[in-house]
Each structure stands twice: as structure tokens, then as C-alpha cells.
Image (cartoon, rainbow, N blue to C red; front, side, top):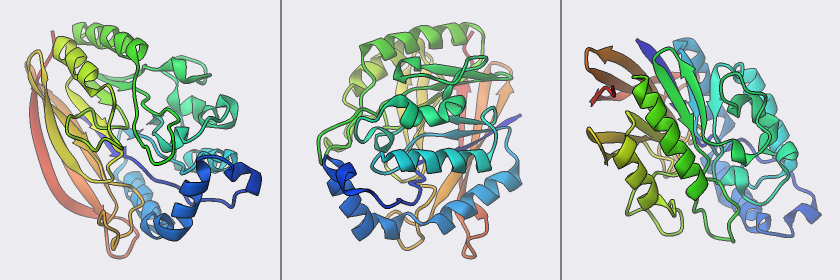
Length: 302
């Protein structure tokens, strides 16, 4: 059995910005943080989630984006330090979210600081967004990382993959399927129809069409700050699409208390059993408690 911890949207605490850094879209996000979001995303909650993950000792950790808030260079440096204290790059796979691409910042000053957590197996630290899709194999599990974060105008939190990334992902998933691996796709925006037009994945239809052709066993996302389940069509049946709550949500926030998911993956002859344990922040903020369970059976690719 392989155990994968999935967390998302930690939204690490905001450092103070210099005035010149706010002469763009950052201004509205920065104001919104100090007026509202600072009370929603609290470091004490995130510390409890991280402590519980370390206690559970999963085989690997997937983090599906939004480590920062308005893409200040000093935010990315803080996030790099936080990741280093969390665990090693070989133990955590990171993909970016829309807040990690809030405005244009050079790769080396932004997500590139986490390059070792993004790069695929055996590759040097990632040097640009064109590295996606990435793949990390862990036994019979293949983690396929995508990037949907693209700078957008104010008040928009949409994302997109683009034709090139979708085409590369299709080829990669087909190859991994022929190897008989359990393919877990990591994506920040939920690839679902009916999402808010201000926050949706703009090429959801193209992504779903690609999945119908080549399939995968599980899709994990963040972005909505809620634990949620949907399904999309694949060539062998319906594929679970599972979102996780924000890992730093305060218990009295509109999203409810912070959560992460422990995903237990096991092959049963010609299928995969996926048992997902929802774990929620406890009242003492020093760990988590069980908060439900989901079970899926997915046909194994051949």
C-alpha cells in the first residue's frame, strides 16, 4: 500500500510590501489580505496540519499550489524556507496555483526557488513553467504535475493549461498507462464544468476530452478551499476528481477548519482501491482527527 498526503492552499502569512511593489494587481490583493484573508488563513492551523502529516508519515506529500498570496519576491523566499522545514524535495511534489502566478515575477525570484520540489525524477531543479507536465514515480504510483497558474487581470482567478501542456500531458499519461502505473494528476484549478467564471479553468473542456482519450486513476486539486468530490469520464469509466480544503483555514472561517487528505492506494488484481481519509484540524491546533472517508475502485490500465 502507498500512502499519499494531499494538502493545498496554505497561503502563508503575508510579509509587508514596499509601496512600489503595489503599483499593479497586487494592490487589491494586498488590501484584501490585511482586511479579510489574514483572519481566514492562520499559521497556527497550518502548523497543526503539518504536525499531523509528519506524525502520519506518508510515503509522499502532494501540495497543489497557492503557497503565497500576491507573488511578492519576499513571499517566495519565505515559502522556500517553509518547504525546507517541512520535508525534503524528494518527499514533496509541488505545483503552482494562481496566487503563485498572481503577477509576472521572474522564475528565479519566484516559483524557481522551489524548483527542486517541482522537477521530475532525475531532473535538475525546474527552470521555467515550460517544465510542465512533470512526473515522479514512486513504486507503482506516478504523480503527474500540471501548472494552471497564469497572471490575470484584477478580480480574476482563472487558470489555463494551454494546448502544448495538454498535448504533452496526453502523451505522458498514455505512456504511464501502458506501464500499468496508478496515474495521479495534480492540478490547482478543478477541471470541472460549472465552476465560477471568475475562478474556473478556461480549458476544462479540452482537459476532459484528453482524459476521455487516455485516462488516469485520480485527479487531485485545490483552489476552492473545500474538500469536495466529482467525477469525469475516462476510457474505462468515471474518474474521481477530489479537492481538498485550505491547509491554513481557521475553524471559524467561511471554509470551516483546515483539512488535508491521506490517500491510501492499493492494487487489487485488475483494479486500484483508493481509500481517502479526510483529516481535520483538532480543537487544540496541535494535530488532526478523522473527518470522513471516501473509497473508489478504479480499473487498472494495461
